Length: 493
Image (cartoon, rainbow, N blue to C red):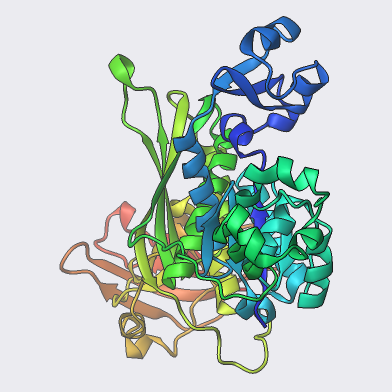
């Protein structure tokens, strides 16, 4: 089924200049010294569309007045289009700040039209914009419904009835003839369609008839789809200096939305991203602060990336105010296919576990989340090596570390980073209580190439039946210092 979503952004000029326009102290956008858009607070103060700058300042001296910038509006509309590529690769830009999305092939993937519309609205909100959504079987019909905020229809018959009630001057080619339509009593599109086609074409031109035929599904529609670039780099200028890194999260979320759409359009997944916090320029210029996020597994989902950025920004202390943000996708991989298992894995999938580890790394730091990497050494403190959890270790290397003759010997669950010297009472080692040896000794003598260690290890038992891994240094010489010294090196579970 061919189905389109139309997204009309009527507040785009206002929102480009003021991201918090709904709660702004009063933002007004001017074009040729006349009001083009005004925030709700400015309208409440009496500011009206078409009013001159002097009238605005008279009614609201504290109003924030900015000039319209078509370049910035085009960049914002392109950012929205990039984010929508995560739902379908067929996104086209239409007239008057409207985007058309062919979502007929995406309905089952996203759970139907209602769920897909909710996701589109959520993406638009994450980008900091607001708009009106429509849905129809034709692209031009969707455009007209979005421009008049006329809702959604799913069949041609419903679309025909809905379009017939819309104003006759809604199509752009018909607006130049508004006076003539009013004189002949042609108020809606239904009446316009009942006019003789040859006379209407001679009077208004072929463009009007072509648009009507396309809207009502009587003519084919061709569009030039928006293509994702070969590499990703997005940036935004902030509307004020930010001195708290956590407040950069909203801007970072806008960039991540664009990244998600780009990744889906290119069928790629990202392994590392870099968020650049840009500072002042000019004489006090300083290099941007880089926030790098390294992922254990490639991903293309925005929720996980935003969660990791939130953790990193919460711990970051800025050395200078931030005036802009930029996002780069450093390492990319082809998008992995979904899992082929029939039933879900107990305790979550491998992707869930990787995401949990990545979140811990972002919250605690890479030096505090480690994975075990045994080494081929008989000395326990050397054999038990730890490396960052995001460091990739080949399974062949991991499996070849443990010496074969050690695998069958008992080892404690927890080995201390530094052995603890034990007290001696009645010629027995003491740790909370006298320790009783519960095993025969295991001699470990190694390290002749760096630092020779010769120890006799025992499993010792305390009075509370806790098992410890202790060792005795071998006696060397006959001096008073040659008495055996005992150390606690591990604890059994």
